[in-house]
Length: 208
Ligand code: TYD
Picture 1 (cartoon, rainbow, N blue to C red):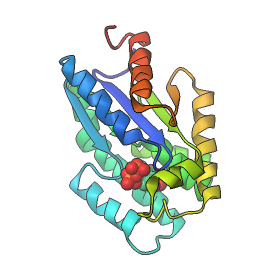
Picture 2: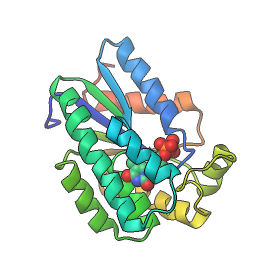
Picture 3: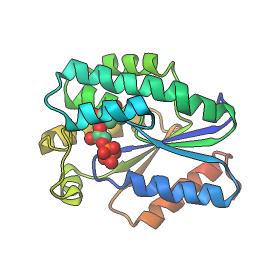
């Protein structure tokens, strides 16, 4: 049903939405059920990815098209070296952000054309699509409040940028309800976690 041996789940959402907590809770729950789980994040997750992460999030100005290509290069390398081998071994892979982040941040946020960025991302990852993408949704204001004062290059953008990203995540999810789960990020983390488990049970990939 999934097109590969393992199970591939991406967590997406705005900065400060609480994705990382959900990744951690799901990893713990799956490991407690005896599954092998690989947790990774993008950008990052490989040595090259860590270097790209530093350049693109914490370096000086990067031209928008170069930003798109750097995020795509990070994913291409990461999928080849880390994600595909783990899926081929039958593991569960949880990634904190994936291709939709680029479609939303670079395509919609930077206004570079979501379809073009989507096509480039799909080329970079050789069309590896997650079995499920969980979108943890919060408003731009709420995300900013939760992030506090520490900002990387993208987080530092104003609210309209983050609003455009949010709307784009929601519209991607609305277009493919079978492959997405949208969660209201203002609900308590354990309730969100339960909703993720329920969805995995409904997909038949997790025993109730
Ligand atoms: P990170 O510190 O991982 O933030 P978070 O904890 O919110 O996930 O930073 C990742 C940043 O990079 C985040 O602002 C989103 C951005 N990003 C893109 O713009 N394009 C991409 O393809 C990816 C993967 C991330």
